[in-house]
Image (cartoon, rainbow, N blue to C red; front, side, top):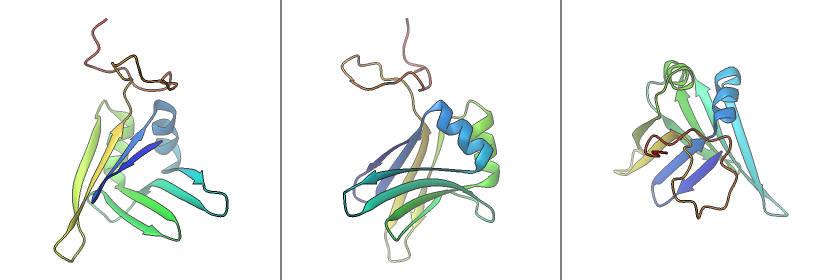
Length: 123
């Protein structure tokens, strides 16, 4: 699972295996350790909501996915979803959930074997 955070924008991308696990369990997380503390980021299926939502508490950032959206995302070719979550103070948090595609740029130095085939790759 990968996250990208910039200002009031959060993007989560999952590999094939992570999408499968999320489909089965309704939850997937990852942790970055900093020695004396850790930062956890998670994706969780949630009943009673109709759009992506998120919160941050006790060192854990969680993005919530409505149940029907989670089922559709994990069982179809749908790439992702987004939402501008109202923060209640005149600000919004942009949320983006995507399946992780293989990079077209061969200079990327990471294992991409579990990523989805990039539809822009034409070989």
